[in-house]
Length: 127
Image (cartoon, rainbow, N blue to C red; front, side, top):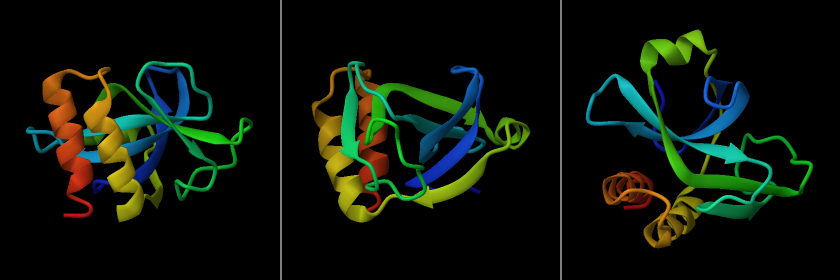
């Protein structure tokens, strides 16, 4: 269905609107996928700020920046993804995965378990 590194758009019940997400693959439960929020504004602990265009599939941001939020790992079952209209719109490359993995190693906004999961997922794209 979705793979590590996919950029997926779906309605986020957390944000209450359609959002873009970076897929981290399945959790230990094979029917639950994990994602990081992709935003256009920053200001939160754990935000990795990138220039527009670095993440394929994202529209141009009003700020000129795209943000990968390492503040929360969003988990969603496969059936809920379908219900919320999930669609793959792009994917990150191995180079960007390396940059994000390095950032994830240094952030303190995730639990150790979440951090290990995120780093392992991103590193799988260039290992």
